Length: 321
Length: 185
Image (tube, rainbow over all chains, first blue to last red; front, side, top):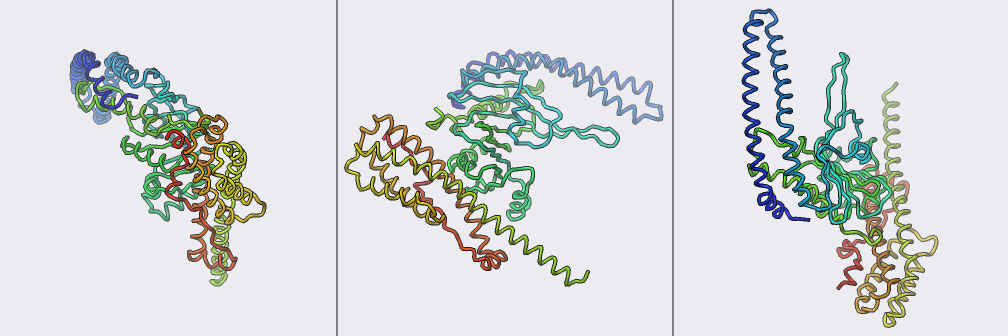
């Protein structure tokens, strides 16, 4: 797989002319959107002043007007930027992925299937809304991999029938074939309990977590500080989580700078990286030529597809060759 | 309900909880050891075949091969305690490790497909054994802690529970026997 610097070189050497074209498109859309926004807000404000300002329900009218304006502007923003986003994904993200690995494919409107997300057993809440995009699938160094942006939500309804949504997970979800065979389920989660309640109470809470399998205490203090592990099989969990593999997971987490959840189920590794935002979506308000923005796309893709190399999933055991 | 009755009930509940936690720790050790035993047996079963295959190439290593055969037959005897098995495994692993190192001096072994197959299988079993040892050591550490810590130590000494032996994991063992490296060197 290409290194990060090789990928950055490709981005600037090969994709820069396309980026410049897209940047022109972005500026035009931005101007159009600002013009529409000014016209819309002025019109609503005029209507409000003329017809509703003397009304006894002034505040209600004002709030309704603002809500309607925001809804209309959001719709217009999506409509105006949809072609730009499509072009960006087709001409920038797609080629970037192909450059990382020729055996990778990209489908911008697809995502990892819900049953695979649920199979991972990383999140135990019931999912009421599941959506995603930017689906990448194929092979990296001979290892099957698939990933996409995912947003999974749970619905709540109060006594007055008012709905609210809680986000269970938003970020990148990766599934890859694992290089060892195993029969049981093992889940690695960020260690909140011990960080909040201290090691004694936290450990007791984790050991008595009824929604999870048996607590698995591992012999790497740094790993134990960062993560909590639950497994159906104490031996198999350690067969997967060797000392060197625990180190690699810690390194991967440091690189990602995000919260990560991992599970090992049905001979596959599942990784959920919480970014709490939809990735690979260009904004019309930020320049595409900005270094920070560009590097975010390149680094995120390299990190996610580099998981095979980072965790050495391509180092196959003899029995799996 | 009188105060003395309440104290009695609370004491009873606390005793039950302490007793249950001790039983849980003891059973956990037994459960994990059953897993360790299964994997150790897998390795012991592989040894006769390995010795038969390599003995024709390694005639000068007869002593080592005999030692391995002797340890294997001791380790596979019935009615061994877990502590005895732990101690035999340490001797067996050390002898096997010496054999692996000595195998480097016999390049013709690389050409034998059957030996290569056995070596790879052994390598994978070694990884499983390493995991099993770590799981067992964690269970024994929890159990031994319960035997030393207040208040579980009082009930443990009353029940005549004894501390259990840990598997010795040397630094070299943290890195499993890597046959691939041996053969490529």
